[in-house]
Length: 324
Image 1 (cartoon, one colour):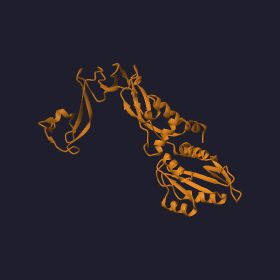
Image 2 (tube, helix red, strand yellow):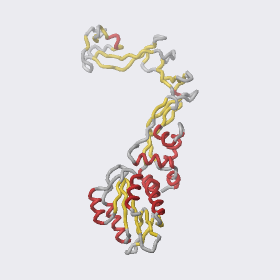
Image 3 (tube, helix red, strand yellow):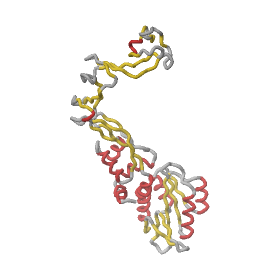
Image 4 (cartoon, one colour):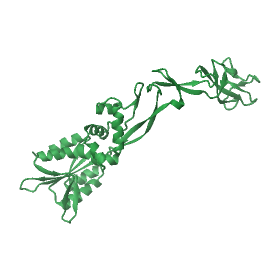
């Protein structure tokens, strides 16, 4: 795990954001358009308690740390003069630059080849060819749409392609494409590979470790135990009682970011480790739940399974499972 990931994981705002992902309340962070600010991220503003553009900087930092994935979602046009996002596009006459233009459809009569704007074909709510006076009834058979044609209501000239100009509704500045300012906006999602260990650390492992220490245990996370086979086995938490009586508790945590049940393979692997290490008690915390077959195996192997939809509920169930 990179140092950037570890550093960000200590940020409580980051923890709150990932908790919403893990609980299923949030799947993708998408921006919404605001005339004053452009694109904003209200879901993130609510979490970090900072107004725009603080949420953009926060998300960009998590992306740079490898915690979030992102993909291009939109591009926002800003005024070249005042920076406002309240900008409209005007389609202008290439001759006099007026945006007072009229757009029409070009129609071609297939039979005689006559082509003109649709208005010239309209006769009492019917389409009639101005050249041969034949009625046109079936598009694609009698006639076809041949494109668009524009006419300037100011200078009277016609053209096929208007020239786009941008108009700022805030400062009334008009500017061409060459002066346009664009800003990319992204949709963000969790990088599941990077987040797994971090999420476990601060949502489950750290609180459980603190709880065990309060109960008088010496805690290592992750912890190693030597087995009878000579192999050292790693667990998410190894808690050793400080009294004279041997009391070793091991805890593994498995989180399904897809919300699917944890497969039985996790129980099988944990049993192999605990059997070789001769631990006194073993727990598997499964978020949100374990498969039915995995639950049966856990009972057979004497592995205590804690199932919970959210990390905070898993902690409460774990605390309740240990005798005071």
